[in-house]
Image 1 (cartoon, rainbow over the protein chains, first blue to last red):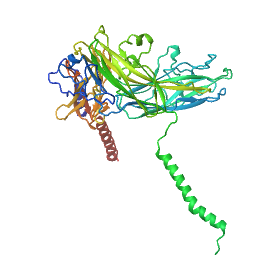
Image 2: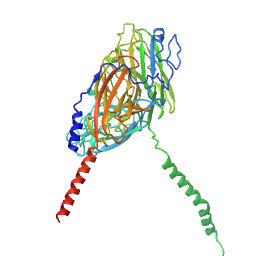
Image 3: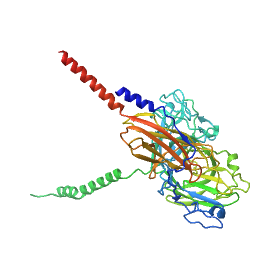
Image 4: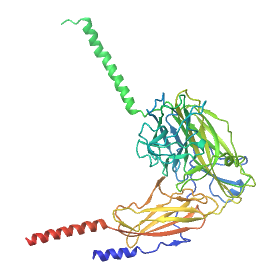
Length: 236
Length: 320
């Protein structure tokens, strides 16, 4: 009996998926745009327009020459898109050969007023002495890693500069605290890489960036520096 | 009993100083527990609005004010506008920063590029004037307004400095009549064909823009349990789908983006789901259906195993 029932149900699965070009009675609600911009109202030299700008009123477009909507219509909260970096100067102090130095900072994103977000990261160049141009190369981890793929970096005899991430919305390849990536080096034409992203609306998402630098005994003495750029952009 | 001076001093110490000390320790401990961490070097930027959608005739002008708030240390910020293209199907932009791409649109925007100093808690309004030239082609153009902090030279030590940038997207449609062609196709509407009754049906929706202007899908997924079940309506999130691209569309509950899935905890029977929407409020309605069968396989399997064991045990007992 059970087997017969199973066959009966399985036979239903062969039914096709139907596509319709048109639905005569669409079951949806048309909403008038709901403006939630926390900023000023758009204006032009000839028109001063109130909060109803963007409504699809007949004749409006032809008289003004534009239609404008600001903010996400489906998010009613007036929450600005916010981005914080806890520490702008990451100091490694005096570097000792084959002794990794680490330091960390926190990134926080509030995308309450936006439908998702991403944070990209890149470096202006490898850590270098500005006067001589000597560099600490970007890490290749214990075996291999790049700006797009993290790798384990435990060996103290593997030298370079890299970063690990932990926390919310980070790339999946940061398996644990031993996995590191290079920063995308803009001076070499590399594209900034996403280090945090989400498709959902959040109040405060937080991640920790741990920077690590390890130098060899042959590393030229001097002061090495670079700039890491974090760019937070809401989804469209 | 006589009390000497030293005993009196100790007594006063215990009576007056110790409570004060205790209060001080408790107060500090409470502050430590209650207060959230404050970072001495924190850079914190906010921008509003996070997105701007403009449909404009060539040669016309409109101005938008952006408000930037400095919630961290004093900073100097500078603005720029760069084009972007869709990075993926999740609504993430990929900004294009090569000088040629930026310069190609330099006469479309007008804003004060002078860096602005902001103290902690300050806000600043950036006015951006949009004037697409008369000769601009009627189509969509996508940009991001970027506000970047400026870095100082830093200390003379081994260090890496962080620079923060925050963006707000601009979707610009150039149209003479204000009614650009908006057309969509469903690139994916799927659900599992067969599930256990205790599983949930999750609908995957991807919509492609095959028109000449971005749009938001306005519509629903209506799920009917064929025969006797109730009807459930899931509302599609009106997320922007850009020209030439596809986007995985979520559902929306209130103002929360959620996966498109049935809320029911126990499903049984055949479920017919109909995705129907229009690009924005107008345009051709599009629909697609998919079916899912929910059956309590886990219960049947468990019952079968129980019956099997029951009969086996019964047979063994009878044989004895």
